[in-house]
Length: 222
Image (tube, rainbow, N blue to C red):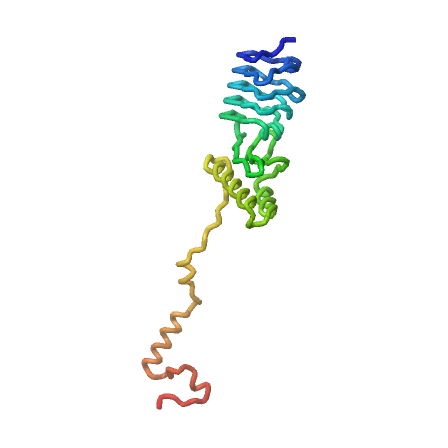
């Protein structure tokens, strides 16, 4: 069994048993991890640069690792991998993506992502795992509206959704605002015609100006 060194360059790892003794802080540059099972192996503070993890299976034993420019085409992810590690300019395959959000003041970091095994984009934060509609509904009532956590969470969600919309990853439906000018000009049918007819009768002296006085039995035009 070949032990992994602190510096590993252009190595094709085909057997999982090589990862039994991974040095803390090991660096992997342009290495191949395709089609292998990484579920039971531990990596701490490792650096992965331009590595290929195509169709690899990930576990939760990655802590403090940094992935830069890596390829995760059709890889099998676990959500815990997002919480404990950092990803920079990585490729997840066509139609898959990650947006890293801010860390809330209580230590929870928010992610908006679409992985190969997910039908729709999902929000991850700690043990929470919701689609967009469920995330909005959950955090809308999770904390009192005037509390700092509520305002902070709403700002984080708005940030994630806005970035995803700018990048063309999601479509946010916008409701059309009512036109105030149109609302003011809306009048009952025939109203203008009735006013014009009344003005004409007033000018001819046929209708008293006090309006409806004949109906009350009061004589007008004295």
